[in-house]
Image (cartoon, rainbow, N blue to C red; front, side, top):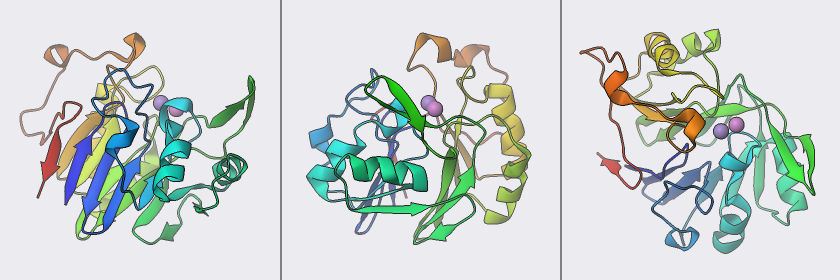
Length: 221
Ligand code: NI
Ligand code: MN
């Protein structure tokens, strides 16, 4: 399997024929070293919630690749209205294919002509990459629900650490305590000034298994 960081909360996952993007914020993402055209082949696009920095280029990518968009029911309607017909909707706690949708404490809305519309519950995804389990938390504050993820035996926990809109570093460490993943991969930081993180200033436990991916970097196993 291969996991590539695109910056912010955007990742590319690959395992055999499964080629997926999650929260594909590419064209507007100041830290993303890729362009939309760098992903000509996608089987799935996952969207955790309805904010522009997570919906990103979903519509353009789905139209270009025919990828199945996986999201909550309300966002599914929005994507249908944007001309996408290959959409699978699910909701918190449900499993479908390689995915389980997990809860997140956050907002979720879509903007149409300057007005905000309901984007359903924000969420995250557990993704099974043929034996490697990834948890992408989406945008969330620390929540007790994360304790339930311990039983899922997560290999890589992708957790937001940028604060302001989501958990900060200290709460991400508390999340790691609850989830007990094999590795932590931080996300949702440094994209904008308000979520900048200085790793030098952080209290990083010596036994923490963390991989800080720079945008463009991958993990392969
Ligand atoms: Ni958000
Ligand atoms: Mn966000």
